[in-house]
Structure formats: structure tokens, C-alpha cells
Length: 99
Image 1 (cartoon, rainbow, N blue to C red):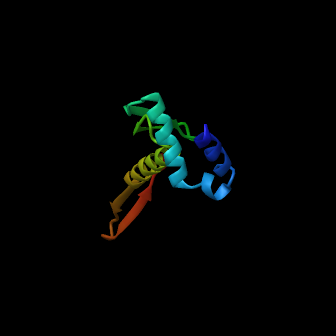
Image 2 (image 1 turned 135 degrees about the horizontal axis):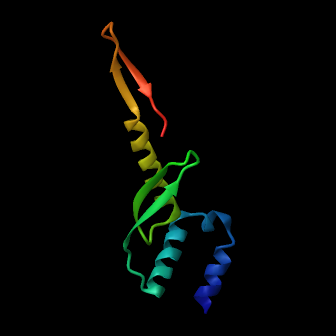
Image 3 (image 1 turned 30 degrees about the vertical axis):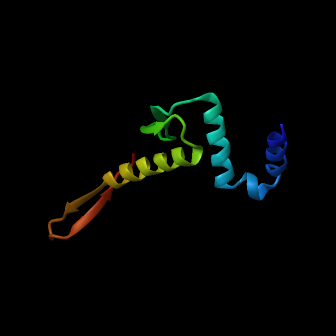
């Protein structure tokens, strides 16, 4: 009971409640109390241009880790969209395509 009050009290401090350590502690406590085992899941992300990307994540990952996985997948797909083409003069030219 005292621990709950303490956590409620310190969570009102923005510097603490926005900290990675505090949020990791709360997430771990929540997972321990629910005995949730991490499992591999796929997440479909639909882009504004109508395309879809799929990322593989753990069911217990935090939002920041999921967003990093999405950004990495977008970066990989964007890098594959750059095509080098040789011109008739022998110079190379980049063509960029959209996702």
C-alpha cells in the first residue's frame, strides 16, 4: 500500500514520469504482475500513400521501440528506391522512386 502511494506521488513529477528508467520499471512491474511472456508478432502499418509495411516486434515492446522498428523499415525501403542509371556519356544518375 505504501509503495503504491509512493509511486503515485513521484509519478506526478514530470521529470520522473517522463524518464525512461521509471517507465521501464512500470512496464516490468506490469508484465511481472500479468506473467506475460513476450511473443513475436507482426504489425502492419498503413501509409498515407496507400502502401503497407510490416514490422516484426515483440508483444511487450514499448512504443518508442516500435516506432524505431517502423522508422528502420521505412529507411530500408527508401534506400531500395534509389536506382543508379548509367547515361550515354558514362555518368551515373540517381533515379528516385516513391513507395
